[in-house]
Image: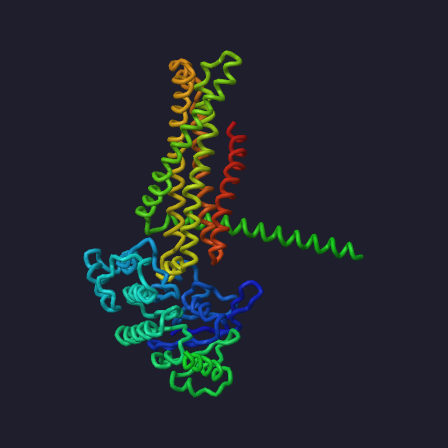
Length: 247
Length: 262
C-alpha cells in the first residue's frame, strides 16, 4: 500500500501540497481528480520518489521512500512503472527498442526472448507491426499505448498514470481508458491515475480522490464518490459534466 | 535615515545574490562529483561510452582538421613575416609547432568541440528533461546521471586529447605547406627546428590542458542541459549559457594552467 502522511511541497514561494494524507489501496485503480494546477502530477511524482517532500512521509508498504538515497530508492522503484502525460518515449529509439529498453537494462528477459515478449505486449495494446516506427511517426494515442506497453512489460506491482488521455480525442481517450481498465484486470497491479475525464473515470476507477488547495478533500469508492455532498466536489463534477454536455 | 535604509537593502541584495551564486557553484560541483562517482559503479556502460566517443570524437574530426590546417597556415604566414625581419626563417617550424602544441591546439580544438558537440549535448539532455525522458529513466530505476552524463564525461576526457593531437599534427603540416611549399623555407630546417625545440614537457602540458578542457566542456554542457528550465526558451538559454560558460572557463583555466606549467 502507498501511504502519504502530511506531505508538503513548495516550488519557490508557491506551496503546492499543503499536508496531503492519502492511502492508495493495493490492487485497486485509484483516480485522483482536481482542478488544474493543484499539484496532482506533483503528488504522483512523490509516490515514486521523483520529488521529495519538504515535510511529511511517503510510505510504500513499510518503507518511507522520502528518506531513501539513490540505490535504496531504485530498489523500491523496481516495483513501479509510470505512464507520463507526454508518454516520455525515448526519441532516439524506435517503438520496439522503447518497449525492450527496460527488459535489456534490467536483464528481465534473455535477448533471444525479447522479440517474442515485446511483440506480444505490442499486440496486447493494439500495435501489431508498429515496432519499426519512430516516436515522431506516432499519433498521440499510439504514443500512450507504447508508453503503456513499456510500463507493463516490466511486470510492475504499481503503475502510475499521469493524465493518460490528455490531448486525445474522446474516442481515443475512451480506448485508452478501456485499455487501462482491461490491463488492470488482467495483470492485477495497483494503479494510481491522475485525470480530468469526468464522468468516464467513474466507470473505470475503484476509488476516487479529489485534491484541492493542496489537500485531499474527499476520497471514496467510485460509486459513493459521485454522491458526496461536499460543495467543492459537487461543483467540480457538475462543471465537468456540463462541459461534456455542451460539447 | 533614508539613505542608510537604502544602503542596507543594497547590501542585503548583494549578499543574497552572492549566496545564490555560491550555492549554484556548489550545486554544479556536486553534480560533477556524483557523475564521476557513478562511472565506477556497475553496470559499466561501455556501449554508451563508445557512442559518445563516436559523437564527440569522430564526428568532430572534420571541423577540427579544417580549423587546424588554416590555423597552421596563418601561423606560418605571420611567423615568417616576423622571423624574416631577424633573418631567422629557419626557426619557423619550431614557432609553429610550439604555438600549436602548447597553446593553440588545446584551446582551439576545445572551442570547436564546445561549439559542435557541447551545444548538442546540452540540447539533447535538455530535450530529454523537458519531454520527461529523464524522469522515465529514473522511474525504471536507471540512474540518469550514470546512463546519460557519466558516459559523456568519459567520452570527452578521451576524445578531446585525441582531437587535440590531430589538431597539432594537421596544424604543423598546414604551417609546412605555407612555410616550405609557398614561402620557400627549407623543409629540412622546418622539421629539424621542431625536433630540437619541442620537449616532452610541451607535449605533456598540451595533453594536460586538453584533458581538463574535455572535463570542462562535458561538465558545463551536461549540467546546463540537465537542469534546463521546462520550456523551449529555457532550453535555448541553457544552450547559449553552456557554450559561453564553457568557452570562458576554457580560456580562464588555460591561463592558470599555463602559468603553473611554465
